[in-house]
Image (cartoon, rainbow, N blue to C red):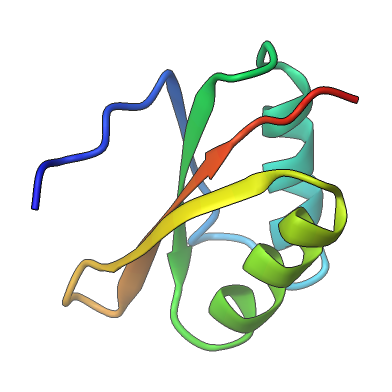
Length: 81
């Protein structure tokens, strides 16, 4: 499968819930509509909560990729406010 190209990336592996979502949300707010954010996060709570919360905000989840090192990368397309 082809790699997803993204406009910005944020690493939240050093954060714990609920700061994981807060940092991801702030990063998304800095993007323009239609841009893609790659969010690197740890397995566990972030993988369960961040995608759900972002989807509830109305953004589009493109892919959740297992990095096979205990982290995941979530690709999110910003949908206009």
